[in-house]
Length: 364
Ligand code: UD1
Image (cartoon, rainbow, N blue to C red; front, side, top):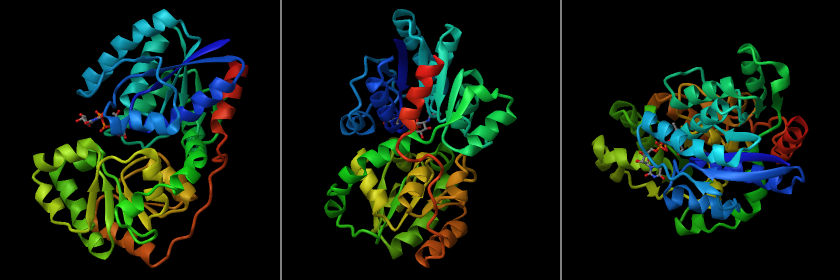
């Protein structure tokens, strides 16, 4: 039996871990274990996802919570090391690019345990983004890497990684989307919010570069003010963003937008319903660019760069930055129906986790 400890820490990890735990649980040669670092801990940022996605109860919860980058990363490392020493796994598997990813990855390799990175090779080439640092460093120390798109393979090649260490397998987050789409269709969230399918926008915003800086945040609000006069915008607000509104003196501006509907962070199924039924999605997230590509819903990404270029080349994504004029131009493109519908990237077919399990059973 191959014993693999998988790590889940923050919200975007949970939809990636769910299909992996399922595939590992069904594989005769894999003994799976799950560790939650506790990086995200609110009911609506964590437990709700475990319940809705049927993720098994973590074997260990490190209970770390929020802190500065250094403190959070260090505390996760301190708490995870004894778990690895005790459990003696054959491998540790990390997903994505959050602080839990690099923290647990470092612990594993320093103890001589094989490290597996799922969603490897993505690069925004913007080192000011904490996630980019986490991505580069995690790939640098990983033994086996699984990529969602071809740019990931190219980036790893360019960084000198040997061919036999990385694989294109598709997208585990899309495994979860395809599995749960029918269930999400039954969500009552549109009725609850008095929204009509195809006649509203869904917004998410939580990148520090957008919501920690009053000037940038203010410019994004300039664009949102105009759009919400045209159609309702539903905004499940991330705790970081909500905490910042009063701190940056922007709470009154947001409250004055009568068609901007602020709601608590949504669970997986409600959020999938909100995105799949929207006229368009406005976001600074990474994963949502991919989900909208599969849903064929136009996505306006309010960032200067993306580590997921396939969503622009093939999908429904427009990368526009934070200039209000550019956001509004992209919005008009959507409303006027000027954009092609987009296509599905290779292997985004709901079977990525099974491919990963098969490769791991062979390679380990
Ligand atoms: C983290 C990830 C980011 C990911 C995002 C998704 C890193 C470096 N960043 O950013 O890549 O896109 O998660 O959500 O790992 N908070 C709560 N409750 C929670 C969690 C957080 O109130 O359950 C608040 C706290 O005030 C905390 C702040 O949100 O200080 C930020 O949380 P943190 O985990 O540090 O980073 P995120 O911004 O969530």
